[in-house]
Length: 325
Image (cartoon, rainbow, N blue to C red; front, side):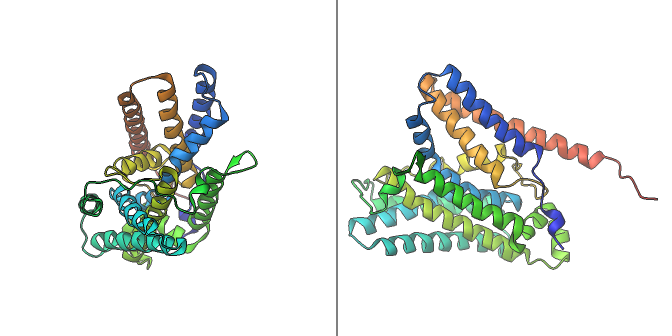
């Protein structure tokens, strides 16, 4: 019934992919050492957490929402998991704790937004600040250092010439692509994003779908907390400070407007957006350009993407409807 809401790949997704390819080609030509395989590996390493959390952000933004707490959630999980690793607890308990904490925090966000009807931006901004205070309290102003989890090899291993992290990201994206495009839950997300009122009249439990979306986002943020520990071997006070804005930028560049749009967008564009930003940051660093300018370029591109979305939306709204005979 709701299959009509599943979008075909849109121009913005193709645009994000073309933009990524053009960026890699240009940097490879004009920036020394950019095309080094080791440099590509570092970019994949440094953007794995953002890539995985951006799946949840895609889900939330397709529903017309936003989650500003994902970085703080990743931080809380990292601190708890880091303390468990310091106490030599079994890996299975560390992983389970990360998932449970992520789900719990996500469910709190979902309940506040879907049950109490508090705007998502205010709700997640508030909970994000709460979790940042929790991080400070748990760390006591100190860093967790010299962490050596048993799964740290996942961040440096290769299968042939391909990084294991890249394979992990592609598997996760393939799973969620299937969820978005071939499951009832995915169709409900697009239907709600297209027209929430119509979705309610069609019998969709909008609150339940929104609750699940925030729970999944929390769980993904929890899992990335483990990847962060494996990659860095430490947990600092500022962990996750820019994660939310990076995810929002990736999703926006990938084809989903800042206010969400159930009529279009998928994880394909999101993945292209993640690595576009990752390679842009990397290229700017290699060129010796001040880091402030990278934020300028990313912010400017986000504004352009949202502006294009708004113009296209106005054109669709003003397009005359041709009635059948």
